[in-house]
Image 1 (cartoon, helix red, strand yellow):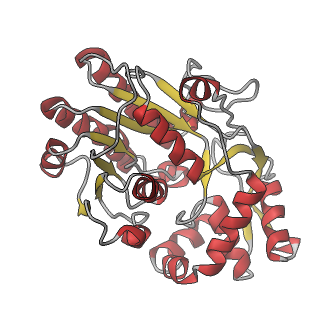
Image 2: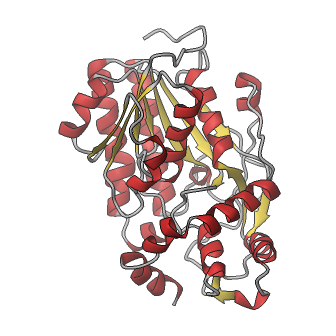
Length: 344
């Protein structure tokens, strides 16, 4: 398949968004709805513990939108949806490192077998572009200069390894069959609708309830933090960019902070005491630092971050303050049982 030489138009396109009821996927659907009113969006989501139809409430009733419950590793669920789609954006993934350490098998099905099923259907029916949404964790622990796209992959936990496998499967369909595949690798996201097992929503909601903020080890582990809205704009830029088939793009705000720094900002914003910090045993194989260099993305698409971390974090904290009806029910039942086991 020949690569495109001019920007792909989203006007009137039908986009299949897998994993679209999750945190980043739902925010991307919101972005598409706001920026491209004539785009049709089908969301395919298994609706596991982190997939929440409430995340998509802002687009309910929108013309051209529908939510389909199904597994990306199930060919019968995938095939008819790919057949009617112009583009596919694959967010669907098991994504929590702690859970992958306990049991890697669901991660292999979702993050390797799932993309394979999607790609096989895309090959049968033909699409304009397949965007595989991945993670900076595939590069492993970065202790020196930030990783560029040609950096060797050294995933150090089962989640990261499964995502590296999915990336490899996606690229192989470009190299072998000419499928118009692009892979993005993003740093840590934060923003509204993020499941509260992740660091920022967990710390914010725990602080709101005057509960301890569990800090692994020293709390000095560093990540780059990007607001989900900036990530969504980057994904749109890559989705429509000309001549990028078969390429990889890092997405990062180049804004590194460690856990203790973020915790301090959250506690200060909420006027909560530092005594809420609670150090717990470190996670096995806990990577000390992830860092990406996103110059390629900027040069090829003109994308730039718009949301500063202080502004983004303040707005995120306000969102959780204003939406207890969203996160309150989540932090009960299965989540409460898992969280208690995890944090002791």
